[in-house]
Length: 128
Image (cartoon, rainbow, N blue to C red; front, top):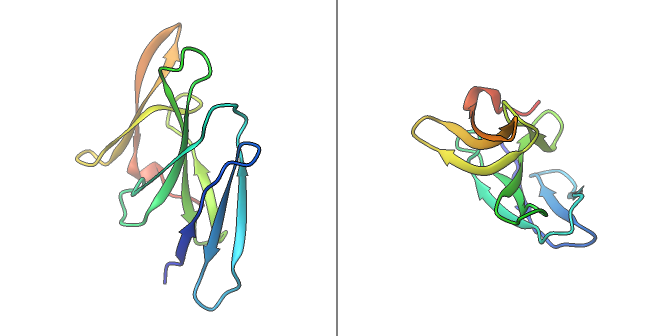
């Protein structure tokens, strides 16, 4: 049985606090800290395309403020916590879009000062 996960988010020194409640287990909290002065935002979606909701924390880049930087978290049944997943290319999910038809996360990264499209397939999105 997948855990019932309740998330509440608030910014305290660039952090997000996640409350994890599982049937028959003690509630626990996970605190995620982010190195940014930008306002943090939360989005909930089926990022792994498997019917289970995960969440992302995103903010506007601190340069021109035109790109969004997203970190995507999926619940790991093995670890009983949310783990960050990484894009197939680049360091971060920049300008993240969800392509439900192709079942992939689409983002951009820069190579030689050129914006390049990155497609992260759903089979690479399983948390360990």
